[in-house]
Image 1: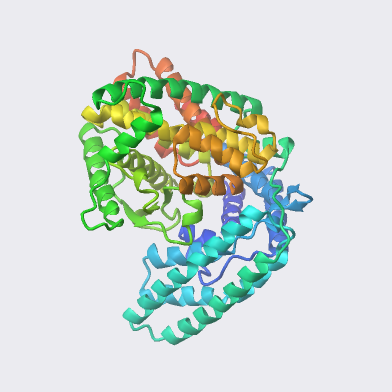
Image 2: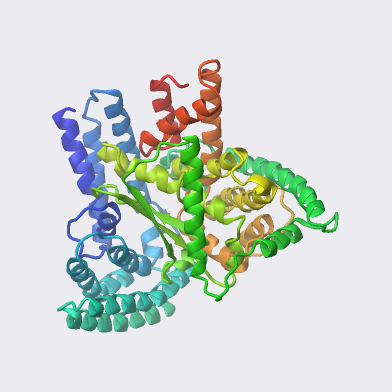
Length: 565
């Protein structure tokens, strides 16, 4: 590694460690008592630093294949950040229209509470310092806003509303450990609660807009800077084709399952799904929703045993998963489940957090036939395995890279792959029916993501018979999502919340899914006569996992370098 490249990597690391919550997420033990700086001045400084790094990257001559790849990944990450912080819609930046105080305050504090190996006193001191900074943070957040998007205002208010429960937990922890500064914490919390009440009142009185579209040119650039080199119209056709093909599979399974369970021959997809949800409902003898978490733990162990018996994936020894109920402040944007990856720069055991959103309304999201799919997706062999392995990669740049279609393509591919191997045994039809109906969301996500970015309602037209006429974009998009998936209203609303804020991320699920299967088919074709069956799968899995994070078009270069394609 040349000195100039090494210095660049150091600068890249410092840049992507500027944000206080990023430092917590990535396990970088510096200045953990700070909150993120929401000011326009910090955004401008970040853009300037990214621009300087981008210019520096162009002066470096790579000394190896990996250095060349890392430089290209760094350029893409820097360009994406600059674009995110500078593009405008409604004549203003995204930051000016998106209040995120609930996320900025809650995310880092919760991780310091639940996923930080340091002593109680050190963590409580940093949490207390963060809580003391809340009034100033809220002032800065409010000051940056200019006619924010109404849906995002409502989301931030909901998330702020969940923070007192988090504060109560922290207070109980401080008292239980007899922390000597518990009084300081209590005073900070009192001032923070008062400031949050004022902030919410001011948000509610602020002029807002319902316009959230950025237009087709900006949308295409967002997609490109996520590493996806496909035009928007091609993504739309892909979604329509996927929903058509998946719908045909669901219809075939509907007929078989209606006959198997003695339902009417013309029972609808929704009726068959409702029957399966009732038949395979989790038994909660005491009525405690948290008991569902234990059922996930059982499934986690079962999947791991199945994988190890067949040696399907390389599994690092130093990894672990914690399965938790989604905290209240995060629930508005976690529809059913989510995974927080292991801190990429923290030494020792790679521990992920799997969040599950539990409520009476959402209980049908957690059944005996849906829990395996969720655990495959979020745990091993899904996100946890992929991201814990990636966090061990020696490249500093790859440990900072976010490549959503790489991660989501992997996990959605696995939902089919594990069923193809026969993991669900005699319940394979039931599981595939449930999985395919749930997986239909990734086709709807492409359509809705494209619509929410461009404002072009024709992107919602993907061959699904539903009402797309409502003027409110969230109602029109919700009608499509509900028709395709059968999700309950609460999940539909939570899905739409994050679709609207994470532009280009929702469409990465199906895009990645198609690209992973295409890559795997190319490997099979190239290796015909040399690698077959599970041996081929193992070689594919190992290189995919151990190459680190990167968009799939970059990963193709890795597979070509290894002579697998």
